[in-house]
Image (cartoon, rainbow, N blue to C red; front, top):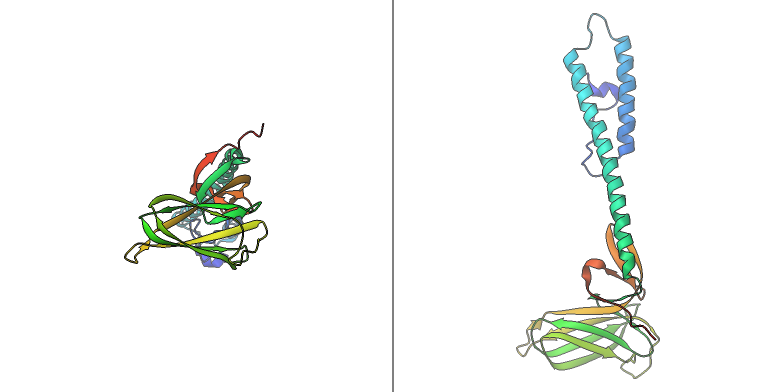
Amino acid sequence: MDLSTLGLSTLPNASSAGFDGAKLADDFDSFLTLLTAQLQNQDPLEPMKSEQFTEQLVQFSSVEQQIATNDNLETLTSLGLAGQQGALVSFIGKNIEGVGNHATLSDGLANWKYDLEDEAETVSILITNSAGKAVFTTKLNDVEAGDNSFNWDGRDNADKELPDGDYRISISATDADGTSVVSTPRSSGLVEGVEIVNGVAQLRVGGNIVPVNQVTSVSSVPDPS
C-alpha cells in the first residue's frame, strides 16, 4: 500500500530532532482508520497482497513501540531529575567552594581564591560590579604557584566605599618572561537553594549560580553557640 495515498508520505523517526510523539500517535491512528476503510472498499478482483499488508503493519507497529519507549524514557528522566534534586537539598545551608569568579561583598569584605599553574611575576586583578562595570584594579608582584587568595575591602580606586552586592574578579598573570600563566579563580559562599536547569544540577549562592560539577569543597557552617 502506498503511504502517500494516506497522506503519510514520510514516516517520522523517533530518534530525529524535533520528534513529536503526539503527532506520531495521531498518524498511527489515522493509518489504522484509513487501512480499515481501504480493506472494506478494496477491489475484490485486485485485493491487497498479504505481504504488503504485513509489511505496513510491521512498520507502524515499530513506530508504536518507539512512542512507548520515548514515553518511558521521559518518565525515567523525570524520576532521575527529581531524585537528583532531592539529594541536592543537603547542600542548602552549607558553605561551598567551586570554580567561579563571583563573590558577595558584605560588610566591606569580599574574598576570592585562585590557582596559578606556575609562579607569576605579575598578577593583574580587575573587579567588576553586577552591571559589568570595572570598579577596582590592582597588581600583585611575585605570586607563588598553587593556591592563593585575594581579599577586597569594597573600595574603588578612588577609595570610595561601594555598596554590598555581587562582584566578579578577572585575573591575568604573567611570568618573568612575559608569558601568560594559567589562572583559575574560585569563589565560595553559603548555598541558599538548588535547582535543575536543562538537566544540569545547580546551586544558588548569593544570587549567583554554581553548577554542582564545579564544586570543589563543601563545609558545614560553624554553630554560632
